[in-house]
Image (tube, rainbow, N blue to C red; front, side):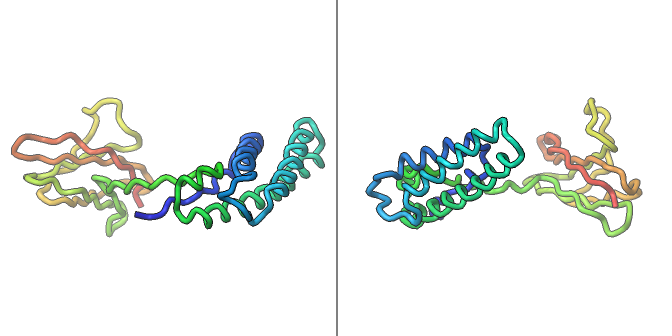
Length: 204
């Protein structure tokens, strides 16, 4: 299992969300024995954060120069808190509790990407596409359907391209530059399955 990681998404927060986030980090790291020698002294980080907040206040109804100063101070503050984040991650060495005690945010373990049921690729010839889908155990055949332009309001508007015993199907004689939607269903001894989520493709 991979180690939890600290994320730097805080640099994308809005000005006032960021200031609040940084205030929380300062409050949690200040005089905390878990973080005795941060790469940037907490007092220096707090001083720069005060400058950033003052600049943000002035820029609310201020001049272009005030706004420029705010953004410059924001970049300087971001740089300091990136360094603090790197320090915390180094000290924590994957310990979630330590990262959270510093006020930073943990990355979420990404869910494995689900393979789509149906994939649509350019065909070997212009005006054609290759449809390929996941096999269904016990299937006898697969139904392939198409609609041009946009998803239909009614299920009855779908047009059946064909039926195959394979998990692939080539759709031909399509209009180049036009978007089509495709879907597929499996036919088993128990009947026809629900159609998969439609997939679109602009024909080349």
